[in-house]
Length: 192
Length: 185
Image 1 (tube, rainbow over the protein chains, first blue to last red):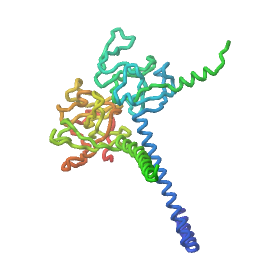
Image 2: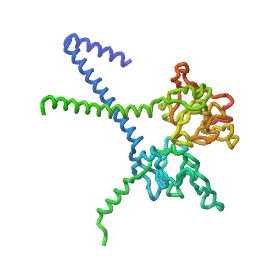
Image 3: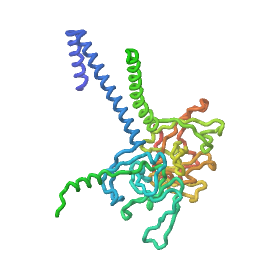
Image 4: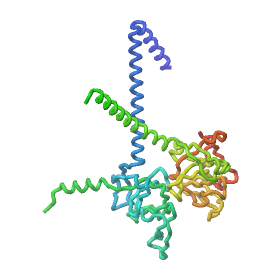
C-alpha cells in the first residue's frame, strides 16, 4: 500500500514542476537520463572487456594460485602462493618431476596440486610399502601418475588411480613465498 | 617533411591505433565466448548413429556445443555431451550420458559385467553399440573432462533439429542413486 501512494505523489509533484518550469525541466531530465544510461553502458562494456582479457590470460598464459593442504610438504607448504603457467599443457610439454595443478578426478570443481611421477607407458610401483608383494602397473595412454611429496599425508594416484592428461590445468614453475622468506631472513642480524 | 606527408603519417598512426584497440577488445571477447558460452563443431565418425551422422562420411553433421549449460558440471542421463578423450587429450569425443555417479550400469563388452560409477564420474556410450569407443572400453570418465553439451544440429539444413535428452530404455541403469530432473531447461 506504500508504493502506489508514493508513486502517485511523485507523479503529482512532477506534473506541478513541469507546469511551473516547462521545457527547461524536460531537457534537464533527458540529458541526466542519457548521461546515466551512457555511463552504465560504458561501465558494463569495460567490465566485459576486462573479464574476457582475464579469462584469456588465466586460461592460456598462467596465473597466481594459492595452494592449501599438507600433501606437497616440504616443497610447498600450506597456504603458499605459487605461479602456474598453462603453456606446457597446451603444447604437451609436461615432464616427469613437474609439479602440476589438475582438476580433482572425484570433484571437478576443486583442484589438486601434485608432482608427476610417471607419464603414459611408464612402469609404476603401486603397492604400499607395508605390502609384502610389490605390484607394478603401467600408466595407460593419455594418463599420468601423480603423487604428493608428503607421501604419508597425500591422497593421490595411489588412491584414485592414474589421472587423464585432460584434467591437468597448468604447471607450477615459481614459488613466491620462498623468495619473501629468504629476503626477510637476510635482513635480520645474525647472532655472534 | 611536407604538410601532405605529415597528414598521411597521422592517418596511418590513427589507423594503427584503432586497429590495436579493436584487436585487443575483439579477440579476447571472441575467444572467451567460444570457450565459455557456445561454439560449433563438425561430428566425425559413426559412433553416434543414427542420432548423429546417419549418412556416414558423405555428410557430417555440424552441432551447436553449449558450454554455458555445463559450467557447473551438471548433466542429465540421456544428454549428448562432448568431452576430452581420456585416451588422447588432443581429441574431443561426442557421446551420450548413460549413467551418473552412484549408478550401477550393465556394461556391453567391458571387462566387468556390472560397474558402479564412482563419485565425480559419468558413464558415456555411443548410440551405435559395437562401433563406439566409449566407457565400455575406457571405463567411467571424470566430470572434469566434460567439454560441452550438444543441443542442436545446425547443418545440413534438412537435419536442423533440437537434440533430445532421451535414454534408450534398454540402457537404463540397473540401480540409480541420483534422481534425474525431468523437464529441466
